Structures are given as C-alpha cells and as structure tokens.
Amino acid sequence: MRLDVLTIFPDYLAPLDLSLIGKARREGLLDVQVHDLREFTHDRHRTVDDTPYGGGAGMVMRPEPWGEALDTVLAQPPVQPLLLIPGPGGEVFNQHMARELAGEPWLVFACGRYEGIDERVYLEAQERLPGRVRVVSLGDYVLNGGEVAVLAIVEAVARLLPGVIGNAASLVEESHEDGLLEYPVYTKPPTWRGHEVPEVLLSGHHGRIERWRRDERLRRTQARRPDMIAALRELPADHPLALGPADRAVLDEQG
Figure 1 (spheres, rainbow, N blue to C red):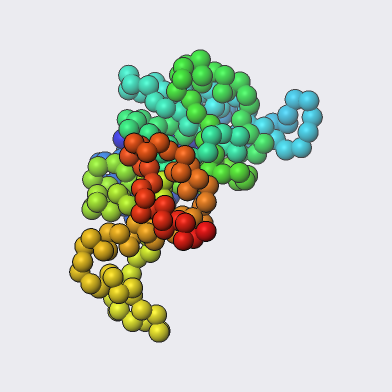
Figure 2: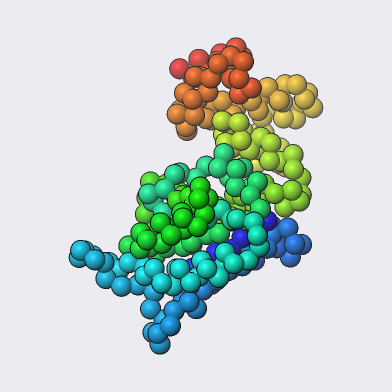
C-alpha cells in the first residue's frame, strides 16, 4: 500500500517510523511519503494561509499550495488514489471503514490547519477524483490539525494489511470486529496482589473458555457501549452477527 501525507508539519508524522508500522515500511509492505506543503509556496515567507473572505476569526489555508501539491502527488502512478481529508465535519472513522481503506492500494491524506482549507480545493479534488474524496473525522471534537487523525487512521488501517501483524489470528476477536468489544485478557502469574485469574481460563476446557470469552464480550459491550448491543438486537436471526439465545440470556442477566 502507498500512503502520501500532505502537511505543514512533516515531523509530526515521525511516529510512522516506529513499532509495527515502521517495521512494515522497512519491509516494503507500506510506502509512506510525507510532503511539506510549504515546499509548494513561492514567497520568502512560505505562506500557506490568509484571512477569510467575509471576515471572522482565524486563518484559512490558501488554495494555491494545495493545488500544486495535489498536482505533484497525483501525477504519479496511473491508479487513482483515495483522497482522505481529516476534519470534524466528516464521516466518523470506525473499524468498518478501516477495513474498507485496507483494501485500497493508494491513500492520500490532506492535513488541514487553522480554520480549514479553502473550499475550492475540495471542489477541485472532487472534479479530478470523482467519488474518490472523503472527509473523515475521528469523533465529535476538534483538533488543531489533521496530523493526529492521520496517525490514528494509518495505524488502524496498516495493521490490517497482510504481514503487518505477525499473528493474524489476533485480529479476529478484537474490539469492533464483530460488533462487540474485546474480552478481558490475563497472563502470568495466576495470583497478583490478591486478584485471581478466572478459574475457567486455567481449566484447559476450550469450549468453556470460548463461551466465557463470548459472555464477557457481551457484558463489557452492554456496560460500556449499549448502542452497539442495541444494533445487534436489531439484526435478523439469519444474520451472521445476530445474537443467539445464550447471548440474549447473558444480556438479560445484565438487565
């Protein structure tokens, strides 16, 4: 997968050299290119922003540097990238979207700052990439810029690529993969500061362990994210993620 990031703070993306993402880059699983938007300016101050038309607080990112930057990045391979623009006014990023994006060969991120990017940049991008421009939000809050969102999105997407996570089975029962949160996990020692590992996990009985983990996922999701349980309750009985009788019995115990 190829990733291009346009930003006025390229050093902000340095964490992409760390941990499993950095390892994936070194092994050629990820091709990450970070571009400094100020390199596409032509004045001695390397200006990327100006006051908004119509007045108001803050500054707006000028269209000219963005236009030249996108011209340069898009003049690469023949395949069309998916352009992602992080912003609080976009669709909320989730695990389902992460899996969608993991199927893309090329993602381009445009990191806005200040009060945002001149709207004409969005219009130009949509004309050049019909149906391939998405505004994405991490949640209902405002950040100083798109770089934090890019770090989160890249990590969530890249770990789903073949070869990035050593044990692919570890991805199967993670939070949000099937509409539930993950079960509690334990390791040695069996007793720590008066707290015991649940007996079932020491039993070696795989059927009981599997049921316990399912029950704990249901209880945890009901307690922390009842909206997710409500969505599962609405699924038809033949849906692969539909709750079974044993699942509903556990939830009924929770009230």
